[in-house]
Amino acid sequence: MSVGARRLERMKSPVTIIGAGLGGLTLARVLHLHGIPVTVFEAEASPTARAQGGMLDIHDYNGQVALEAAGLMDEFRAIVLPGRESVRVLDPGGVVLFDKADDGSGGSPEAQRAALRQMLLDSVPAGTVRWGRRVSGVRSVGGGRHEVIFHDGSTVGTDLLVGADGAWSKVRSLLTDVTPVYGGSSSIETFLFDAASRHPATAKAVGDGMLFVSENSGGGKAFLVHRESDGNLHAYLWLARPQEWFAGIDFSDRVAATARIAREVDGWAPELRALLTDSDTAPVCRPHFTLPGDHRWDRVPGVTLLGDAAHLQPPNGEGANLAMQDGAELGAAIAAHPGDVEGALTAYEQVMFPRSAEAAAEGEATTRIIFGDDAAQSLIDLFHG
Image 1 (cartoon, one colour):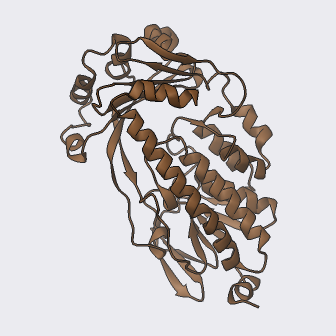
Image 2 (tube, helix red, strand yellow):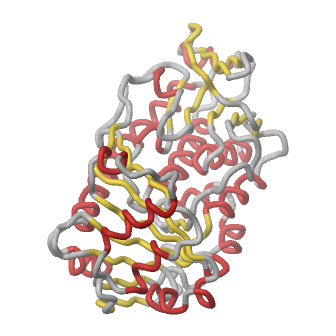
């Protein structure tokens, strides 16, 4: 019997997951379905402690596959927002270059991240997630066991530790010294609430689903806008600028920051500029950080990563999908190796590493398109493909 098999047979602790995001909760759900004890530790004080982000398109080749494995497709269909798969591309003058309606095929339906997270929380037993448990550090204690240290000084030991703790993962330090670096661009996030009645021209320009506006000059700027629930418009102005450029803007001064960012879209159609100038919230800068596209690590007994902790990339439409796929596949691997932790983690990582590298390469190619010299036509070709 292998060391891993012997160790799993005498496991006294449940599988320990750090982070109650979509990936960690998908893993917890799949383990629960297989009767495997699991505890999730989350830094946030409660499920509603902060806003959970905007819309997510859940793809039929990864995210939906994960939800099938979790037995949650019916629940997922109930939270999908109809019509949001429509896509529109405009030029900066507001001219419609491409308009594709939602065909109802369900290949990439959209749902609010908060609703998706709550669906996953509702699918695991009460008490599975321990809220308000912020991790300050992790350490190996030998024999494949690890100890998690929390900010309040308490600790928990575990035979199987999973870092689902995002970009700035604490668990990652057990496996690699690699840390995220700035990816060369940031997003300025804004909202228009109840846009159809309060901002009708902008709502009409955005359409029913997702809008892209990109220059063809290679100027390193693009709008991405989603129509969310209640008719709210959630916009991101992507800017390919160094971090120092953004550091020169005082985002605590809403008026000055808005005026400075709005200068980046001088000459654009008024209904597009309104996404910045008429925002119902102060502009928020979201830097894009990344791990190397081929990021991987040598096998360390009793610990692994999933989602952004393992393969952080700038926004490319795949992050949430890959995190859930990681969680579902890791859960299935653990269940399929009932006497062998290391066999389970090896099987999971052997599939996850090349998949995440391929997704990173595709994401980098999409970013080049968005900021490229012929961005609008390249995006249209991508959507036609």
